[in-house]
Image (cartoon, rainbow, N blue to C red; front, side, top):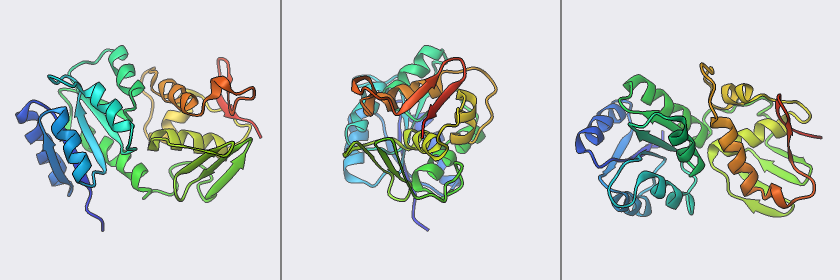
Length: 233
């Protein structure tokens, strides 16, 4: 079995050490950094499969580091922060994070979030979305390949994060079917929705931006107002 490497970036050594204990107990190898630049240096040298990233750090903060990572890498990023307001979560997701855990966190919740993101990233769960047996789908100028996580839009490759890929694959696998934000969250994150949040909408906004939807006369992802989202046949 492949060794899974996790990078923990937090300027509070005690928290980084605590997270390391939880992650090592689950069998992961942990690399620690106490500022953003140290973290970026590790990402350049090591094969990292997931990043746990604190938001509030001196110098380059977590949001800025997240944006920097997304320039070259699609590894899952889970933000860690004492801030719990929705606007802070939206900022983190808007910079390219895949998930968000608020401090003080429950170790079991953190472990579950990590496993969920790694399962998606390493493609160990082929049934994470409906009709996953279809390895490649071509629909309305979009070609999406489940096996190599490659997305081509009108002949041009688009780089997506694992979460963005799974949302797009879910919609493309079920042409014409409308998915509410709750449906998408439960199928892609594999968790029940217990409270209203903007997580799915933020990811779809980023997905549309990467697909350059605003500049296309015919949109690939259609909004059904008051209901949800779909991709037409």
